[in-house]
Length: 588
Image 1: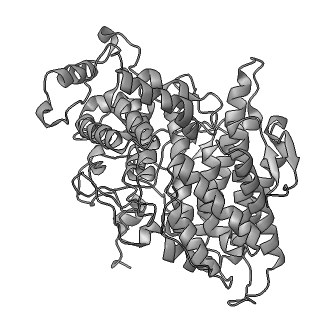
Image 2: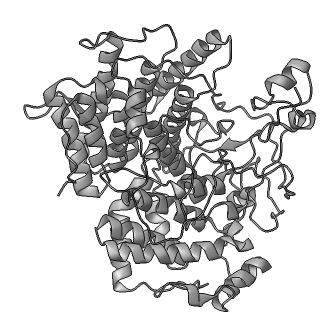
């Protein structure tokens, strides 16, 4: 027994020097012996996130057991009824003759040699799997944090500290004022900053004409990428105002917008300035009070995805790892508000959706803390104010996002407890009911305003919605159904008849056609096109009709042509799976 050492397990098992299965809140070993199961309090250091080098988004970030780390106060919340985070399930059997598992493993950018070269130095960064909930100061469950990790920043304080934006200099905390003054007094060697890097300012700094054009492009076209489940559109309306004061956010927005406009030199210059400032800011205590850093890294993740080589799909995921390192918190009685009343919470939901993309392509559990609970639940929201509808719709959209994340985690979790087949089937049924209940109870506004059959020139049905979050939620619902149908527990043949599709396969294809139809009908709802890109790795090999195959490939080509999202590698992998010679040429 003593030969095992659990670094990420509970404190009880670590003290006994036995292996812990890391099940929360009570692990199997403690539960079996009726021992108190205690867990380490949250801790993280921004130094673990190094934005100037590649990272492994699945690497451990807990450090060694011998490290001495300060801890932030544990937030305990009792007596709140919420939607429980769905626990980890077992890996379902993958048995189709076309082998989606093999398809994903052979085509995943994580499993190919990275061919991209960057102008940034290489380093090592780490990621952990515990995003945190943020509770609004007005919430009865809000607990302010005061302890800051020496040499780093407490995640809890980052997510729950007051926002200094809009406060007078005299009302700012002393360490915040000192840090902002240091930014002007050369506290970090400004000579190392790339030419053209903006300075921090307590006052709004006017944008140049070129900068304003890029921020305007972000507002007109790119903000909705991040606000696709947020009816209040915080990234579209709030971020452009903050860029005048926060240069990290300003350069992040400009790099994203310039890359989307195919102004590669401008994008690279803005990106290098952003990284230089980001490294400087992450070393300051004031970073714990700056939600704009979290927003900047979320935006940098989109820039990173647009910058992936289209022919290979090689993705470092370094900024996804950065988001994880910043957002994480302890796994306890924590809650996250699906209505996303603040920009911090809106950034959390963007991060969840970004995790789903990589989790599906790589067929691995998403890097998300599933001990979180949603509170308040969308069905419990009651407010007569006319604008309360925006909060309600945001909550319903993010509820579906969370449902999907739980489904993906269940399907791709590689941990398979022995003799728990009954539990696995029960969990599958719980998830299926959760998804169908959302579809049944969601507000009427989420329904399509028009549904029609495929036209003469198309293969997919036409579906029109009134808002992005309606369209994206519709796609997430069908994606969740595809995952649950594909990975339903039960006996399966290891090899199937290649020439035929099962009843389940046809059902999966009907859900896939709904996603493609909605995407084709709303080409400017980019997050749904992103959903098509990664869900293809689940349902793509099932498509047998030549006309439908052509339509799928055309969707991918149009997406790259119009929005610079790299899809050539996906098309080539799909054609190879179909037995069709692919092309390595990117769309014009």
